[in-house]
Length: 143
Image 1 (cartoon, rainbow, N blue to C red):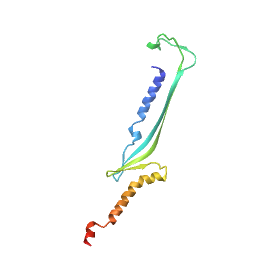
Image 2 (cartoon, rainbow, N blue to C red):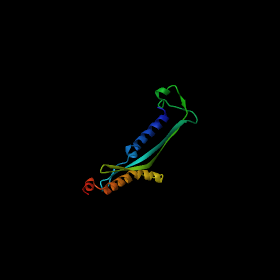
Image 3 (tube, helix red, strand yellow):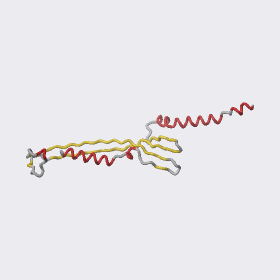
Image 4 (cartoon, rainbow, N blue to C red):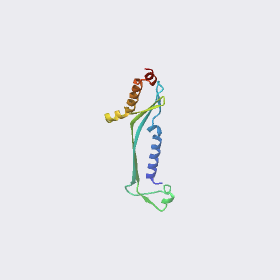
């Protein structure tokens, strides 16, 4: 196996250990009011790896030779590196209470975003107010 492959394999194994589903959908938080809150995040990752053989050729001893390098007596020294970066950005929180699910964004871009989010609550409140002010059919028939 080439040393660059070794570097890449080790780095990818380490990244797999760092990232799991709990990184994107966080662990549930249960409040005293029986409300469950789930944090939702965006995960961005970057990865780069490389290397090469540089400097003066060195002679390899028979112990260092692998089966595919038997005919090769001189090699350049290898140098390489791998770098990975990760950013986690909180996007929203899901609030679950008595079967009702609400999405609460972690950050609002504009007032319009906030208005669109609360629109269902406004409609429900208006419907309830209209239903309370309407006279019942049985009351209007009695008059």
